[in-house]
Length: 208
Image (tube, rainbow, N blue to C red; front, side, top):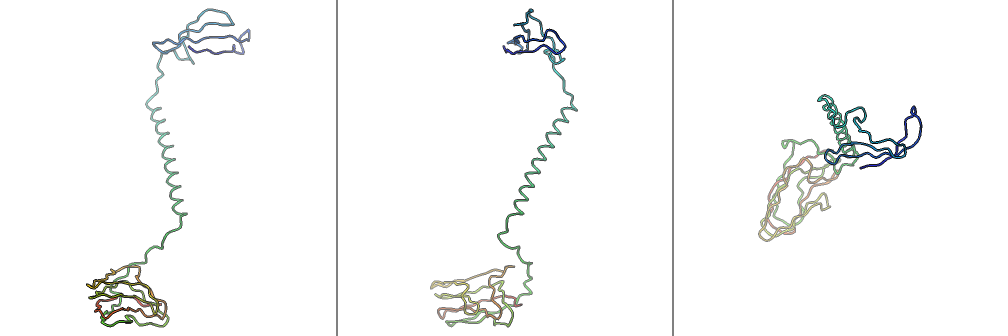
């Protein structure tokens, strides 16, 4: 049971306030009667609400239902599209962690040099060229005994490999990004701390 207050319409007399009570049928859940409070009068059956018979289902056409669902789908799609665009914008505004890889070099464009070393100290694998750098794209070698092997550009150490008494191998497979890069007019050098036998090859490009 619900209570409220209502005012008589503007074209009705007298214009005043009265109490009324809407009675809900507990079995059907529909309004049944209302009773006059301050305005007098007895109970009156409510037969219509908003021009529709009480208890009458209001049909919705399939076309109207489909139009409503289509509208909802369109709005959901718009929201999803907006979310996607925001994600794309955020990705574009985020600085890259690294540059894109260089175009793949054909291995035929690489120059190969042999590594054959059995003395301690420095051995130049690629000689310095005035105004040009050396970029090493592949390198592999074996060592048959304990040794510390240094990879150098000129006199600067840029990598190191330590081998146990049983020796081992170091394999740097072909990479479109060079493993090592010298400065202009710098030699590419390998250094051994012992007289272990070191054998292999290095493949590189020398250019400005």
